Structure formats: structure tokens, C-alpha cells
Image 1 (cartoon, helix red, strand yellow):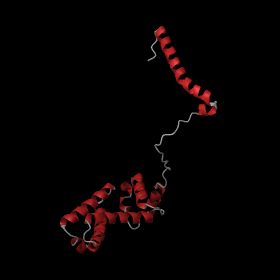
Image 2 (cartoon, one colour; image 1 turned 30 degrees about the vertical axis):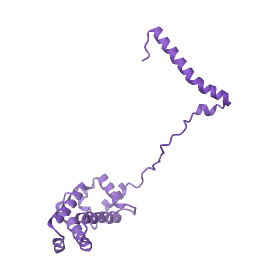
Image 3 (tube, rainbow, N blue to C red; image 1 turned 90 degrees about the horizontal axis):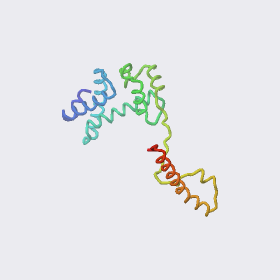
Image 4 (spheres, one colour; image 1 turned 90 degrees about the vertical axis):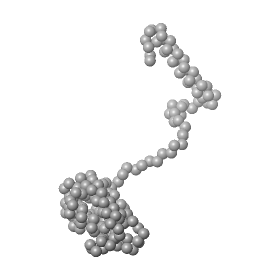
Length: 185
């Protein structure tokens, strides 16, 4: 294993791949150096094999891709079958704050059964359905106008009277406030 990692290309490519993996795993709140080294060496070995097959590919990108494959495989084994096990698993991992109590179980071949039960219980399975609305303007629904069926001439007169009545009421209230000395605004 060490021989394959040693032949992975330049030191800068190895260092970049290692630092990206460390950053990714630290973002998952893993702090155990021994566990980090175990995961990183395993992922880097597989990434080196992939790079040998495809020499033009970036080692850091291959390493992150291999880590994501590991996450998907591990969460698929530990959670009920779902379309994107890694996503729901990571959400459950963070919701449980599992990095505190269960850090050693992360990517382990045989995680504790109580951890698996907690992970399954915390899994977010369904999101609320989203309604897509269009921004197309629609006619204003006027329940009062729909309830009253006036003949066309009366309806036209009623539509013209409403603004006039509103203005008259506003003018009357304004005059009343001026005469009484009470300010309305």
C-alpha cells in the first residue's frame, strides 16, 4: 500500500489530495488522528489506482470522489435503501451530532448496532411537497362581485360609482376632521 501511495505522482499532488481529504473529514467533525489516517490512506490508495488507469485526472479530485463513494457505500449499508443514502446519512450524522459520541463508528466496517438504530431513526425521509407558482398575473377574485349578478349596464354603473363613493366618503371625513379640529393622520 505504501509503495502505491509513494508512486502517486508529485509530492504537491499528494499533499493537495491529502489536505483536501483532511479538510473534508474535519468538516464532518472527525478529529481522531488515527482514524483520519486510516481513512485517508485507504482512499488515497484507491485514488492512486484510478489515477494509474486515467493519468490525466487530478489526484485530489479522484480522492474526494473515492471518499464520496465510500460514504455512499457505508450509508447504504447502515440505512434503509434510499436514492441518495450519503445525503440523508450525512444529514442524520449532523442532526445526531454523532461526531461527539460515535466518531469511531464513521466508515467502520461494523459500526455498533445502537448507532445504526439511532442513525436510521434520525434519518430525514421526506420533504414537504413544493408548489411551483407562476408569475403570470391573474384577475382579482372578488367574491362580492361574483355573488351579485347585475345586468351589464348596472354593473358598469356600479364599477364607476365605487371610486366616486370612496372619494366622497374621504372628502366628508376630511371635512369633519377639519371642523372638529381632530387630525386623522
